[in-house]
Length: 441
Image (cartoon, rainbow, N blue to C red; front, side):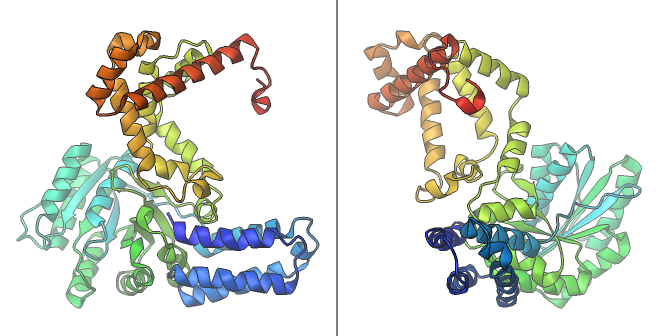
């Protein structure tokens, strides 16, 4: 996410850190590089201009010049001004009497239908009862796509024949929601490859019929400044209450995310961070600013862990680990829990410092390694998983053949596993005391 921009900004800050005391000329030289990095990231020119003016006003002031760590103070200022540019956090409005109507709009290809399903799942996790509405009667297979996603998530979908006008479909769905005690109605409306008057009139009519509390524009973050133009036009015609930026995980630049809020005045409410149905995150400006600057995002990582990993199971695994009773079966269970949190490469980017260390690795390399480890453990018998000490040469050869790996890879995994067990045994016996002073052990 925003790898290119993060790399360039970090290079600028690295140069500053080697200078010690900073002069006004040093700050100006650094900000010229920041300006180039932002423009190359397809950030709106006026947004860049305003952002740098705010940063410079603070960076050449006393708070930096008198600081003992001026370079770090500049990074702090850039971080705070990035947060200001991204805007304040804005939650989805579900106040008042249900059902709450949420209307999703956007161009064709922005990921609107998938986002409707993701949002429904997100709302259900927060004790809501959503009803999906297939109001896109223009795109072939749009209704079937939403029905398939609804079935997959066990979330009901309201659909009618394509001959029924979308405003009528939406009105009927809201009535069904009232009768059926649904708390949120999610309208998946039609899109186009471009904005046209006919599309806008249809959306205006739907809005007039059902009076949605939220009108959310689903926009492809990878389209850069075009995303801002689209947002402005939709906002002018139908009055947006929020933005959902999709495909943010594939956006190495970050132009749309950094420009959209500042130019349109419409808050970003969610980020689509992957293809899976649970890959939707509530938008937190401070967390995104930290990711852009390579500082990680520990809070989101913790939230993902709490959702994906059963706390009781994790505690039992930790106890087994410290008592040297941790087996390959336990390891496989923990591995599968981590996989639920999302692509490992994405998780590593949330750990402070690791995003820069892993930036040159292919995005899927860590996930491929996970799959190979999983395949090796799955090729073991239950007895072998529980008692790794019985893994002799012939057994390892069979496991390698069954998992599509090499004997060397099997040997490496077994060796690392035994090394981990030995280390935990030392910790328990006291010989390893002081190895992790920060943890008190």
